[in-house]
Image (cartoon, helix red, strand yellow):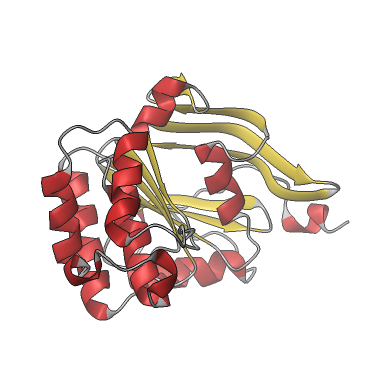
Length: 251
């Protein structure tokens, strides 16, 4: 459903993403892990079409910056970007019009109920607490029910109830055959959620492994993460993709 092929993104002489390649199948949740500065947000923004890059990205077989691909893509950014002069309800109306949604009010009310925003509908964006802004940010990304959804650090700032609801929604979307890529550096927040993990470090993919492969190797996600990012090498069953070894990039 989502294919990233030999994608490189540079900021001047700094290589943020170094020859990345991976494929995500329908009905799967892939967790994109890595320390701060690993390149996770850069590849997410490249997929959604916000950045220029070298390489190829397709969504449902269509180049990611085409109209057909954009109809399939959804994005929940790390930092909410709300309009101070729009109410909570008007934000949802704005997204509905942008995506030309005709029957969305029931979906809107369901999301408001699940994320405890029903009584906040008349509040303006800048009147919300940071946690409430993040809840609205998630609702905006979920309203169009995209076939491929990118979530960048979605659980930061959420209370336990909202985290529970988001995880339930991701499980529901997976059962519907939707594809999700969740970027985070908080391993515990996604430990029971994922089907595949991609671990990045210094702009390269250091491991790309399924849950079954990791369990067969007798390792936890946390063990894999620290083995890969702290220089112990890849465990059995994990594969590294893209980019030069860290020693070569440091030269």
